[in-house]
Structure formats: structure tokens, C-alpha cells
Amino acid sequence: MARTSVRISSLLALSAALFLTAGCGGDTASDAASDVASGTASDTPAAGGGAPKKDKPVVVVTTTWEGAFAKAAGAEDVKVIVPQSVQHAPDYDPKPSDLAAVAKADFVLYAPFEPYAAKIKEAAGSKAKLVEVNLDNDPDKVNAEVAKLGALFGTEEAAARWKTGFDTEYAKLNTELRAAWPGGKAPSVVTQVFTAWAAKLAGATTVGTFGPEAVTPARLAELSAKKPALVLDNAHMSTGTVLPDSGARQLKIVNYPGDDLDLLPVYRNAAAELKKGAGAP
Picture: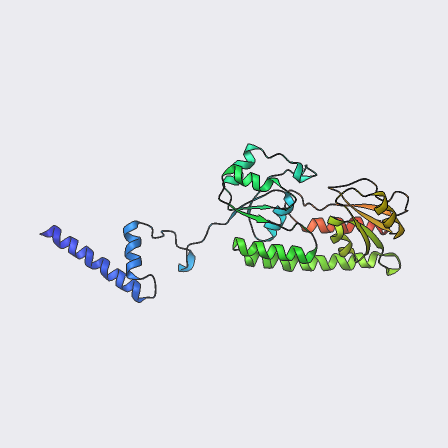
């Protein structure tokens, strides 16, 4: 009889708790009862009584370029597949350790010109979301990609903070470069298609582009006739001296960030190279 009384008392206590929970605007009594019965109720509530904190996404990227975009968007757990020492990422042959990293990822970031990205995901049997990234250091495109990734990762606030700092730094570099041109006149520039962003950073006048395919003699003649002051070459896809007899000064522009996955040094380094091209100290 005593045992029966204890069971009845326990059921009454549970019913009262469920009633109070429902009355306070929380889960319904049926939901709460289901959680108790199944053992799925969270035992790690967030500080302040809010919802449990969601784990931050694990992001695997093919190169440091995608990695920098992911970091700018707020990702903290970022694994890079292709070593920075590999100049041409599409030539990389993934290792078993790369596939193991992909298998644990929430997101895999790749660029359209990196055909092995889908193969990496398939071979690893990963359920990660495959995300194509528009790898272009043009500021408008960078901001658009970072905002997109921030929305995917659930890190919109971090992405917005990064954008504020980036816009400030970009404007500063642009002002400094414009002030460095002799006589204040922007130079005419011929640029490889993937380094056109650097000409924009400098406020230069782009009179022609080349690549990524080999430059034909006919195209060389066309570009030379533009009489550019500078040629911006892509350090990762260089085809050698583009206009050897034109008198134009050729500069190497680096697109990929370092192992720190920081995009801002890419712009600072390009600005320093462009200042040298203008004859500034």
C-alpha cells in the first residue's frame, strides 16, 4: 500500500510540473511528457535560459582562398585541403587524409574551376553541403560571398562585422594608391582576368585583359597597341612576360591568402606592389 501511495504521489508531481510548464508558455504538456519519456530533453541549456547553443559548423575548403572567405563569414573550424605551396589548385591530387576531413564536415567549399571538389565529397561519403564559391577579390563580389556564407553558417553578425572592417581598409588602400600616381593621373593597365580586382583597387584604367588561356600573337598585338603603363600578371597562373617589347612594367599579383586565412593582407600586398609600379617608395 505504501508503495502505491509513493507511485501516485510521483505521478501527481509530474502532472503538476507539466501543467506549470504549459501555463508558462513553454513546451506543451504532451511535448514535455514525450521529452521526459524519451530522455531527449536537453540537459545543457544556454546561459540566460535560452535555447541550447548550436555547435559551430565544421568547414572544409579546397584552398586558402575559400578558407579566407569562410573565416571572414565567421567560421572558426576550417580545414584546408590544398596546401598553399600548390600554385595551381586544380592540379592537386587529394590524399586519404583529405577524404577523412571531408567526411566530418558540415560544409565543403570549392570553386567552379576546381573539378575535384565533388569527387572529394563523393569519395568520402560525406553528407556535407557542397557550396560553390565565386573566387574573385573584387570587393562587391567578396562582400556578397561572405554574406552568403554567413547566412549558411548562421554567423551573420560575424560576417557583418568583418565587412565593416574590410570596407574601411579597402577605402584606405584605394585612397593611398590614387595619391601615389605620378601627377595624380591613373595609369592604363592590362590585366590577367583574375587580377582585374587589383586594377580596380588602384583606381587604374583597364584597357585590356588576357588569360586564363595562353595569349595568342594576335591578342598580344592588340594589347600592345593599347600602350599600357602596367601589366598585372596572376602569380598563380603566370605565362611569363606578357608584353616584352612594349615598355610596360609587369607586376605579380597574388590572389590567395596565407595559412592564416586572412584576406586583408592580399589587398595590402597588392597595394604595395602597385605602388612600386607607380615608382612610389
